[in-house]
Image (cartoon, rainbow, N blue to C red; front, top):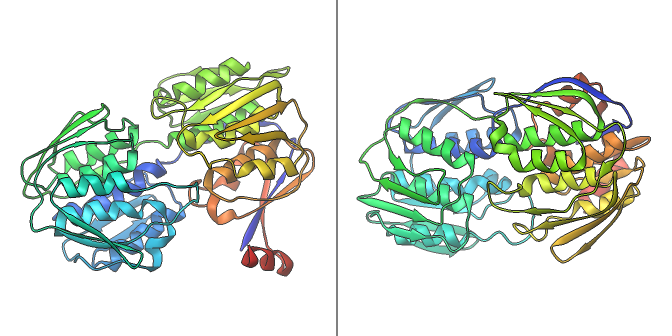
Length: 429
């Protein structure tokens, strides 16, 4: 196991290339199960979640070949093999296997998903959708069992706007009989990306990106080629890093419309932001940042996935800022680690109150989840001295070639192996 080392205080300049979207990739790969012939997905990020899903497709009998950033899936020999344990437990998005396998095989057994521990993230809306389509769903010994004689289109109203439930119901419904209508659907760009892939396979989907999605089921879906959208969360993370330490940083391969809420907040803080067709230019202010209040909301509101790195940035802003997360109330596990680095932050309910400006100090800290890890990287870049971040496996789930990309911008970042004492601490935690 390794830790990430950051020598803080180095200014950033140059261009960073954004990878394909993690939150699309983890849904697009299971969607390949629904096809009857070869599916090719291009520009995938080289992250651990992609490798795990590729292995899971092979586990159920598919051929899945990953060459660089291109995955070629031949799903013809796949079977409805139960996946109650093992790799399926390693990532949250394994629940997309439920919708995809139910859609193709009319049955699935999937272990309850793992991934980042962000507090309760129930899959009740997913189950509600599957049951509306005609599936019987039971929880047996820590795995979800789904069975259906036939899937039939239905009108489904989501009680909570959920990206996962919206995509999962889409996956199950594209091969159901008749029309499915998903109301109060999530509108995230990743949903449009999945709908684009499914439409290329022959699905009939209208309204993706709005709050009402209509799906007319088809009997079969064929293979296709699909190029994934840029990762708006990775792009946003580098924008925050550039806002913290950037002289002149260009983030390349960006759809800036996907990040309008972040751009607005950065400008409010005094950061210079310019956008064009597929790039964003960032320069941090010559003098202090202005404090801002922030509330995470479903898209197109401020993304919960950028709340944690943005909180690190706010430690450098003059005055008090309040960050409220309406999506995941427990998404403040990075705050204790920021305090180790000298941040003046406290958590009250669903909000964090940040008092700045504080000069952070390098320290030994631990990433407890993917975006908490990103927050600590932002903090490490701003801090005086060296920051050591353990829990690197979380960061590797969502950021391709992080060390290389940061060093190309002028940061001083490297990986080191954990020593025996540190390994014992990890094993006991």
